[in-house]
Image 1: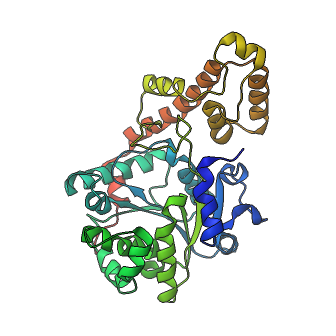
Image 2 (image 1 turned 120 degrees about the horizontal axis):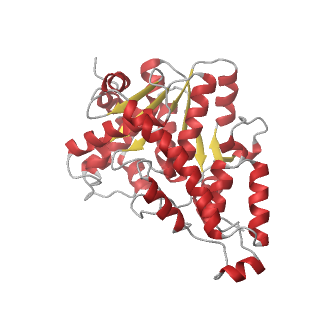
Length: 353
């Protein structure tokens, strides 16, 4: 059955020259690769080969400063953490407080900056190493604009118009922001001399990276490699999104988590009697899919699916299993937040020289 959430991924391969990750024989031994939660790439094979040879490497992975973290971020965060922990490489995290403001996602620059600082705190609580993680908050590290000006000379209006569909009525901040995003992506190469860089993104962000890779080529520096992750399904089976309120936020309490899990789209029958007689469909059941993709190993998943198909396991019981896994994970995250002190956080935020 075709997954509608993979349509954007497929377009990148068919229309924009991305390559399927499954074509690479040598992939990392990590669940996001093994469970095919990563669909395609640009030069990941080259990045991984250089990384294994010990070449100095880095990851750039941004988040938007318009809200708080949710489970929709899990695949990219876990992938970044895997590389940071296994290969001890730095992770640079641009938090786009300025884009949140010019795009109207927040009302004031002050709010965007406060959101960005809180997000940085949440990222450390998620598990990123404070000694090897660096936050680029543009409202604080304004030197990024010097690099953005350099990038802007290599980008023309027709390119931005064709990529984003902007017109003369679009505010000039959005017209300029691709230069800032390119500055974020190329920061390790241009400022630190780190040539082997990986940028894990969702398929909807590939346009930013196509521009950044083109600019890198025009500047005669190595193109950053890219991983395209699949969208995480929301509780309703559609793309997980803050605006749709169809996901679980990392700060949700136990009661909220249970309520949201109980509302998840079900693959079960209309009644308990029918379900016990006919069984359910784990392939469309969101709780089954979450457990399979993010929490259970192959053996656990096989047992779960067999019991669900036979009607031995009810939809409500599967949702309870999922809520227990999420509560356990988020309890640790929420306890970690309390332990993050301001001095530790401050050292991770890049500042002007």
